[in-house]
Length: 596
Image (tube, rainbow, N blue to C red; front, side):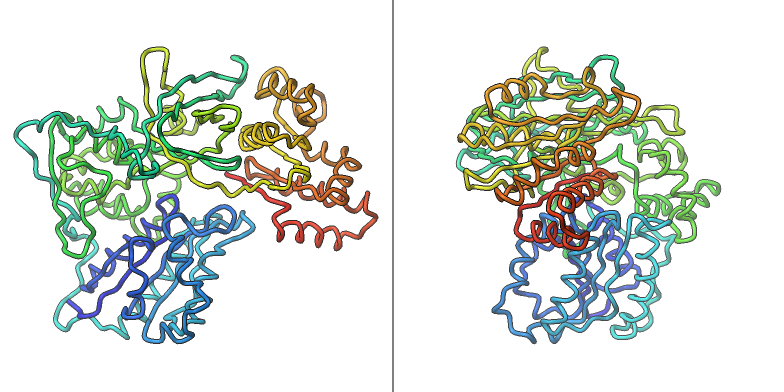
């Protein structure tokens, strides 16, 4: 083994950066290089000055912020007190994962690259900016970037003489080994450890909140099922404000768990413990109890119903003995095969479980020890909180669109979390969902006189319902809401609540029902129509302007409409209108939270 260690540090929100970091780790292993892969926030950043070789892999979240598991690292790295040559002994490279349909494309990677240079680090190559919008997806950038990275790295850090690299078709050792227990341990309560009362609920210690109600709020004839769900958080110590989000991890559907266990000949009631095979990898995943049941692992940990990433096929290919299956799996793992992998997996949204059934010979050869190498962990989902503690004490409410759609595949595709939540029926007995809360990106003004203008079509209205409830309870009545949906009779969420608040003078409501007339009318049209009101609030009363909702065209269209309002009512040029909006964004008077 080479004496040098490659350290791969990642900041990941949805697991893609982690997957890429682990892939770089496997490539190092094949090149006989020592390596460690760690999340940025579990790494002791003070050790960075003594590292020799580091790759940073990081994604950017919606508003240009660093992912949750690198926030501590980020604050440390940007301290003004760090000397300019702190990292002069470090060779490193930065790989960013982003989506160019968002305005702050790969913002975190670009900023990190610049900052590392300022601190004297030696960059082995330019920053890699992977893009979800690329024809071949992020791999279109990652593959060539990694090729060049290894050429540079191996010339500076040559592998030990006389050891050939491990070929792609050879299996690497698994990260963990399973040890099955002969008997069931004493009563295990795996999924609902009641949190220690003083600790605030968090990812590793969520609060089991009882589901109070789960109601459909769209008309039965409407194509989309949207739910209004309430959770009881009594005794959790959870506090939240308007704009905050609730986090929860879904479970796999019972039928998927059963099918998976049958395919791999696993008994869901058996218990096991895990040991790590490599001294350099972290301990056993923190969310897995020791001992753990097969059922808990498959139902609550392994992401078996997600569309698998390329790394899944890389590991699977090493088990294939059937020629036809092996050829296909090797193709899907290769750079040249990304187009066919896209057509097979990503376009039809084929799940990992469905892939296993398509490759029966290989699935039969799979060793259980590789389950944690094959499947990523189920990631938490976040939802804008749609209620205020001032109006609903000890409660959290959300508005949830149930994801279900057709592709070329016979079986409809379903969103894991939304289908799981929609299936919970509190009328049939107590149901609990482990959850925790984190700060959202929307911030509302403290000044009681600042008006707030909110544009929230569809479920984008959720954070604004929270804000209006909170503000009305505090006597802040200058609230304007633009709400848009398809039809007044089918998907007009919270209608009676808005009407009551309008009557009491707590808000002004402007609606756009896109399909209720010949011409489609959207929220941006209403923004233009209300130009006098908006100009008065923004230019004369220092109003704050917010957008939330689906990130297709809506945010851009609303911004364009708002700039037209500035030009028309303020008599200013297009450039000045752009500058005005930029200035509002810099001072926090214009904020948006969008999702795709």
